[in-house]
Amino acid sequence: MVVLYFILGGFARLWFGSDLESKIWSNRGLQTAFMMLLFVACFYDSNFTSWGKWLLVAVVTCWLQFQFWSRGHGCCFDVGRDEQPDCSTLLRYNERWYHYPCDWLFEKVFKKPYEKWGFLYDFLYLTLRYTCPMLALSSVLYFLSLFGICEPKWEYIWVGFSIAPIYAFSISLQEREPWIFEKKTWYWRRGWSLAEILSGGVTYSACYCLGV
Image (tube, rainbow, N blue to C red):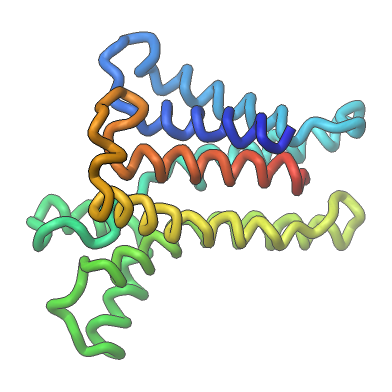
């Protein structure tokens, strides 16, 4: 089952990140519904006879879908491969609060303000982007565990922490071994495609293993 959810999760994330021209398959509502139903399937167990379990799974599913997946990752997903960003790109970076600690590190600690938006900056930004939602989720589950509602699940933090290394590896692989991505299809056309497959697979298989 872990392998099955890895495959389905990889497909779900890849589909969500694709730019298909089909009016049906490019429908955000359809993609979102599939991803949320897949989360519910991951969390399904014998306790689903309890309304409290349904409510908890519904809240966790909505959080993962709309905060972990759907919030966007600005311009950091290429992990430092873009050129010096223009004004519109900077606005996209600044849409999320994650740029504040990254800016502070480069301007005040590293004292390298002109090195911003490179590999390290994007890697840290991407790490915050995907780890913080999981930190919040783990904290809430821990709080609820104090009342016997669920068990603490701090392992979700590692799921979020894994996304930046996945993107860094995938983009680096594309640069070092471009022949792997020579055959272009909607599901395989760049290093980002591999990153989406791996990140989706890791997230959904982990949800199946960890539960709520």
